[in-house]
Image 1 (tube, rainbow, N blue to C red):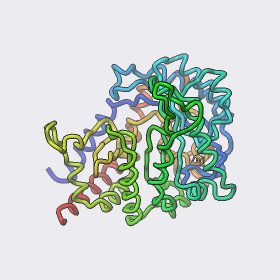
Image 2 (cartoon, rainbow, N blue to C red; image 1 turned 60 degrees about the horizontal axis):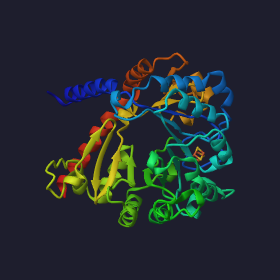
Image 3 (spheres, rainbow, N blue to C red; image 1 turned 180 degrees about the vertical axis):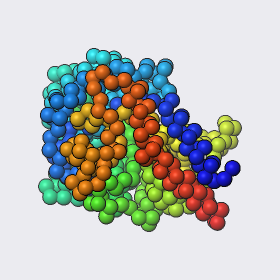
Image 4 (cartoon, rainbow, N blue to C red; image 1 turned 120 degrees about the horizontal axis):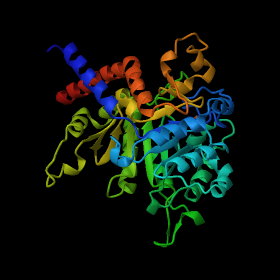
Length: 425
Ligand code: SF4
């Protein structure tokens, strides 16, 4: 069989598998405007509020309908409870209706929020409506200086707002015993790549506020339970100058090692490096050495007595997890993205990643203001009667044709390059 045939066979197999691997998460862009103008942000800068688009398209009912149809944990290919992620950009009072509706439809649903700290404006609403989040993620993108340079270069208040958000996080999240957690995602850029150790020291320090006091252990909880570090995927021209180079990835890796030595727990599940792009995988391979990288991704040790057993590669739906220097790396191949989430935009359209770089008007016209055809980023207009499984499977077909196959080709080539370099050492 020739190389082209082998690729076609692989492509067909993955496409078919994706259809069986429906996600157990809905993630929604519930508001398209934001109070910050972060330089690494993947959203177009001048989005206006999308409240009326959401009202006109019945977004709350659309989300509730999708959540209602998600399988229970026992029947889920992902083996998870149904999840809902409010992925931003900011929390608005009417979003509490969405949370309440989900809780009413699915008592087993887990609800998460990604926020920059401004959610604290609505702490009273959390209390009044008795909403506790299952997880809350607030980014700290470096030292105060770096965070403000990256996220709020003019007003320079973003760090203070984020830290205030972390301080209050335990007030709006469930307790540890009920599965609640607070996380922080740091997006690596060439502004903050040398700040990781300092960020880890901060987020894993005690949050000395009343809500973070754990009376069982007579101690304050840390600001966060987990620190996730990820690379930036530049979608807009203004993101590109921030992308880290090979050399900067080396610095970042040393920083991750330092942070892990101090703060990694025994189960190795509180600090992760998350990678989505093959370009960043190759940078990481170069930073640690291709041989070490290749050893890590081919370590399938099954003997529990072996000292390599704890760091054997694990693959799940849409994720490959491996360890380098004892640090977990989570790789999410872009080719398998549909398994991750049902991605609902503020106007109830099921859309592809990176759709945020255009306005809803452009996306609905299928054409950007600069004249590009962007119709492939919108898969399906959802209604309060849509079938979750049909919508998902239809999206898999469209995604595979327009994105997935190309990503797979890049992934195969990237791993081949790393493998070849590993033999040269
Ligand atoms: S990165 Fe988040 S906080 Fe910053 S502008 Fe974008 S949506 Fe807003």
